[in-house]
Structures are given as structure tokens and as C-alpha cells.
Image (tube, rainbow, N blue to C red):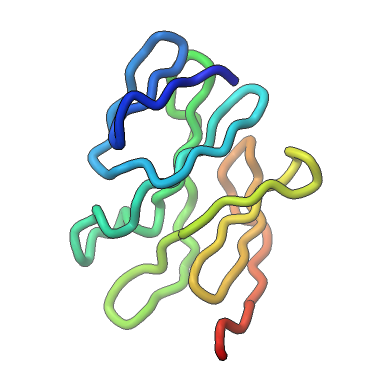
Length: 121
């Protein structure tokens, strides 16, 4: 899908600028949408939206979905996502958080599977 990143907070899709309060950390390009990962450190401490920092934008610049909360909590805050990987071509996405890999449906933003991944030495 055609898009243009204007600056760290703004992306243009279909000629429409879309601004985010947080910086854009990563963009994953799919044929009919882009998946945007918002920078975790830009959220206020304790902001419940930090765990929903992945957003899909459609060809007309509309928000298609925002990832569901993973349900994982760390100390006093919700667990956020730190990366997006393509799997099986573009049929599945993997949302990466500290210690977990979540299978993500690119059409709905729903998490269908969580796999613990040991992050030790």
C-alpha cells in the first residue's frame, strides 16, 4: 500500500495526513493496509493504551483496528508491544513483547495465540 511518512508523528495515506500523539516506531506494509507500531516510551506511565500501541490504517486513511490488550501485566503497568513481524507471507503477523510472541490477525487486530519466549542470558 502506498504511504509516506512525513515526520516521526505523521504518516500520509491516500493523500490524508494521520497524526499520532506518540512517535511512529515502525511501519509494516501490507497490500491493503499498513500496521503502525507506536513508540512505547512516548506513552505516559500507567496509560492503559500503552498495551494497545499497534494500529492498522486502511487505504483511505481510516483506522481499521487497534490491537487488543494482551492481558499481560508487568509490575504496575500493562505490557506493550515492541515489534511486528510478518509470518506466512502476509496472512499472519507476530506482535513481539517482552517475553511473548503473539499471533495477530492482520484483518482484525485480534490476538489468537501467545507463546512464551524465555528472554534470559
